Amino acid sequence: MANTYLITGATSMIGIALCKHISSFDDNFVYAVCRENSEGLKRLSSKKNINIVFYEIQNIEIISEQIKNVDIFINLAWTNTDHQGRNDAYLQGLNVDYAKNAIKVAAKMGCKLFVQAGSQAEYGVVNDKIFEEAQCNPETEYGKAKLKVLNEGSVLCHSLGLKYLHLRIFSVFGENDRPWTLIMTAIEKLLNNEDLHLSACTQKWNYLYVPDCARQIVLLCKYLLNEPYITSAVYHIASKVTRPLKDFLEEMKCILNSSGKLLYRSVNPEKTISINPSIEKTSKAIGSINEISFAEAIKRIVFVNYGIKL
Image (cartoon, rainbow, N blue to C red; front, side, top):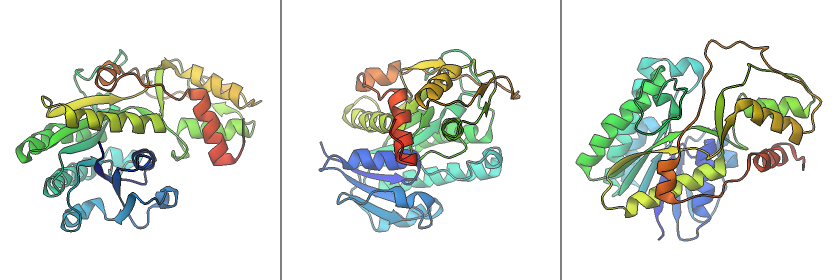
């Protein structure tokens, strides 16, 4: 069944993947909402069923005057995500207000479902396997704000007659990722046969390639739209594969055939974070998905970003 989507933060890595995936079905239509000066705009494909719309999340109220009859509103927009901004209570509080305003806009557009991008940061530091029912103890203002959107946004959606879907997104990577992430930094250095300074990297980690992330999100949207007994829910967006972080790095070094050294324990972080999410609830809702392997994902990133075929 075809649907009309509105996606804020459409030029983010996940936003671009979502627009690409949704628009691959000819009957779907996407309103891709972004800033006019967004750096990612050049990476957002122009298709007949994608309409790029320029609005700031701070002024999202105006958009309902021009766009009607949207089925699903996916809110990826979130400001001040750098290290300093993530721990600013005032700035993160503004994001909560923006999200709640977006819910009101979604109701005016006639949306059936509001989808909010949450984060693993809502849990705080958890060393065991993480289930959606786990108690949340966020340590950053960013995590606290994401959790507040869940608590207040789900209530607001209920009062306005919308379903609410909260996505706890774990470690997603892809071609349009930020250059300072571990994956992108490692690719850059290993391709140049440079040494990579690392922590012990013995903690568990979970990497999900962004096209698979997009597929999970869309399938969850369809599931909730068609599930009459669920009005609000939290689901993990993560890979079915969790391994020691060191394993991913060793695999990358092998794929890239690099002479650069992985210098473990040359960096001593204040905290060691482990990521081991359960995707049982997600899999039960949408079925098992054949994911693109980590090795294949790395090859695709290298080809797209560097023009090198491995």
